[in-house]
Image (cartoon, rainbow, N blue to C red; front, top):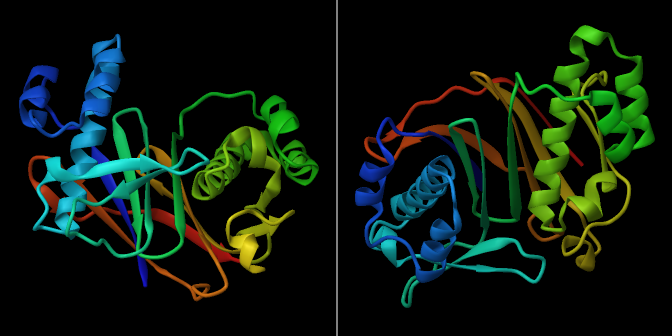
Length: 260
């Protein structure tokens, strides 16, 4: 059992060239969402995201053309793959995130997965945001940390929390304080779950694996929520993908993980 993390940089092409590549791939709903993007940058990012996701799914199931995939949303609003007739993808989920020209797509064969990415250069008022959104323990950790590591520490905790929230599909407003993290713990990374998260909790189990690392100028975090039946640890594979040239190698540095 495994999780694949795909790192997909934006291609060196114009919006017009990307539109030619995406011709016939988008669903009617995706085309409406593309048309609603007012700025060329937003249009480019949206098209790149949809083309990359569709091509990656067809990398797993080559018999399905990229334009044939359909997508639906759960009652929490989390997107999932609705396979074409006659195709039964393995149980599992996908999630994606993008920032500053880098797209990350996580695909797992069991459980629910979430991924988040942030530029390491992102400037934020770490203490103000932590006071508003983090647990008391996380705020105190940041408040007592040295100023030269506070920004990095905040981004690691933030991306870990976002990845978990995206995995369970509950939305930031509902679940940010359900989880707390201590990247400075003796074991390297500690996670605490403060309350059960649906839907895994319905079976009396709520198992989590999380990973945190760096890719170039980006901080990335990945989370997987598993129920009682499928709670054994999953392995993680990190790969690169280009919508023109396909699969290539990629490095995820300073990788750390923990599970509960």
